[in-house]
Amino acid sequence: DGGITQSPKYLFRKEGQNVTLSCEQNLNHDAMYWYRQDPGQGLRLIYYSQIVNDFQKGDIAEGYSVSREKKESFPLTVTSAQKNPTAFYLCASRGMSVTEAFFGQGTRLTVV
Amino acid sequence: KQEVTQIPAALSVPEGENLVLNCSFTDSAIYNLQWFRQDPGKGLTSLLLIQSSQREQTSGRLNASLDKSSGRSTLYIAASQPGDSATYLCVLSGANNLFFGTGTRLTVIP
Image 1 (cartoon, rainbow over the protein chains, first blue to last red):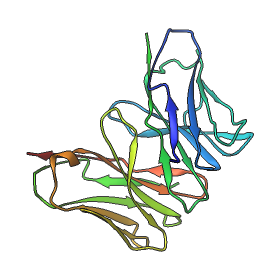
Image 2 (cartoon, one colour; image 1 turned 90 degrees about the vertical axis):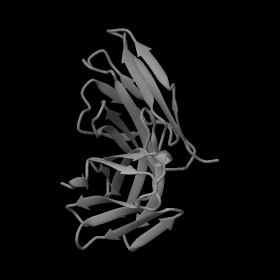
Image 3 (tube, each protein chain N blue to C red; image 1 turned 45 degrees about the vertical axis):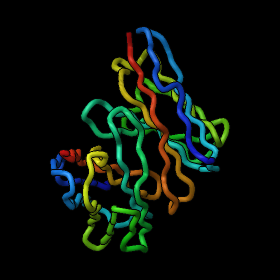
Image 4 (cartoon, chains in turn cyan, yellow; image 1 turned 120 degrees about the vertical axis):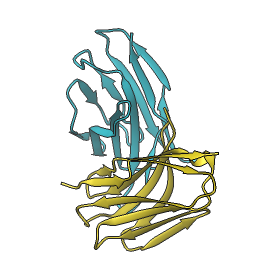
């Protein structure tokens, strides 16, 4: 079955460490997105990519980095520059604009 | 910039009631609108997709409508059940991005 997979489900990070969240889709979608969700808050856009080897900053890109070397994969790195990384992270993908968007099940990142 | 608002922000109803969730948006230049549910600590589960050329979609007890001219969509839930308790989000597809509503947190009381 086609879908979008995020891993891991839970991730713990020590202060000062970089961590990478995985997002893989087998839907042949061109566009992929990363969002952050804080408790009781809406989703905020971190980065998005419309095509391989190209990506754009969203509203809260500081302290994050991404790559899009393959169409299927859009990993997000939370760097040590992100001062408050504890949050729920959601990845999404979309084909041509008229198709529906799919979301992963999320990764909960906690700084310990 | 597209702004998407959902009213009410929270809703509690007794089991069995029919209910309507509202989504309003400021820019009618959309490709489609989706309704999702989100359970606590989980991802988004797609409920219904309405293309911009459509007016309505139905799936089981759910019915969603779209009126682009007035910038409104509604999600109708018939015969609500405790398992319907979740946060409901409307999500609009624009040319380059997705736009999220503010969400309605629904609680169905047994």
